[in-house]
Length: 92
Image (cartoon, rainbow, N blue to C red; front, side, top):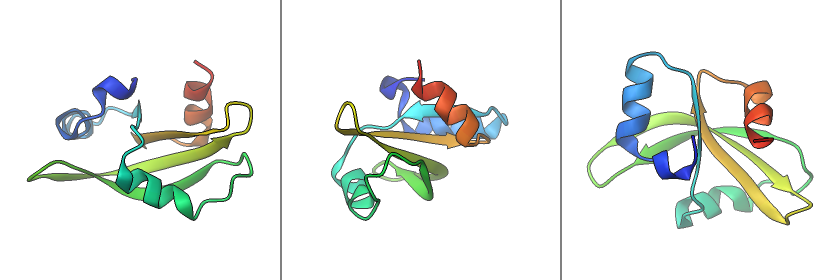
């Protein structure tokens, strides 16, 4: 899914029904803090992440990779997927 679906309710529903997913993540201040310590070497990195709203939280995995050609970060959240699926998503 694209960044328009990045919301805690979407993540929660997909996880509740056991649906594997990858959703593009917006580059918020919190996301930029996470990216500060990641090397810009073009490799995929993962980290546990918490999608937050004002009153709620839901855990997910964060997948990050520096795109050398575009000179920007590729960042998605997901659950039940691995690097292989995220690479496939990045090519769309």
